[in-house]
Amino acid sequence: MTRLELARDLVLIDSVSGNEAALASYVAARLSQNPRLDIERVGDNVVARTTGAHSTRLIIAGHLDTVPGDPSAARIEGETLIGLGACDMKGSLSVILDLASVDAVHGAELTWVFYAREEIARAKSGLRELLELRPDLVRGDVAVLGEPTDGVVEVGCQGSLRVAVTMRGVRAHTARPYMGRNAVHRLGAVISRVADYVPRVVEIEGVAFTEQMQVVEVDGGVAGNVVPDVARCVINHRFAPDRTSDEAESSLRHYLEAVIEVSDSIEVLDWSPAASPALGAQPLRLLEGLSGRVARAKVGWTDVATFQEMGIPAVNFGAGDPLLAHHPDERVSAEELERFAQVLGAWIG
Image (cartoon, rainbow, N blue to C red):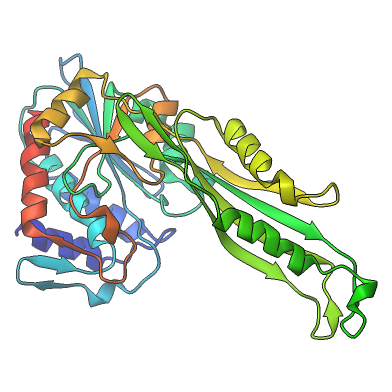
């Protein structure tokens, strides 16, 4: 079976977040082909580890889940796999699973982590479940997360802050709007303010991170003849690794203060930390060299931040164009898989 065919088989197993059990079983069964691995399953997370005399332990990790969609439409056209999760990240998973299943001696101890529920709220993450229940399984010196990066080492990640902004007004009859104050109209000033946001760019360790701010949800209105007294929007702010979540929240509040009054409110709904570049770790610098390309900043949030919270330097490195992640026409090519396999295989030795 080629890696492209293996990737297709992984795509055909429905593993929308929360439904990873079947894929976890498939992964565990294939890993069992390698007698050198100690395999443990924790919920729908699968961890396979070598145990030997090497002092260095490398972690290679990937998430099993996909965003919602129909996996049955997966197909191979020529040398390209098209289907839900092909890019994010079952293409990379096929390579990781294939390499992990081979009975071979490597230049370091290896930990292969296949975890559930990455695509939904961080509190439900399978990686965090492992950290809570079996932290001993995910200890190591450095980690590589197989997110799609088009074969480029992508360092760090943006933090993510999601807040709800609630604007207050006064109800009135729409025939006499002067008796009230329209909260939806007031919300328009918040939306305009966010729309005018100029992204902040910060360079960290020679890598440029660009912050972003977007309104992602709007809610308001009472009835067709009522001036609304409450309106709400949700803002997603992606912040650079030079800021903590508290600093990012403070900056966002400061940016909106011109259109916010005392009666209004800003509530943090959820957040995920940013992660700084980690190329100071020699094994990760080696990976960059093997890739043949200069590292760049990760656009978006990934679990490199979770690993770095654990004190484990981590980078993103995988097959597939990250711009196709979550796209209705997700795809990955055999060439991309083979290039990823060659570099990752050389890295693990």
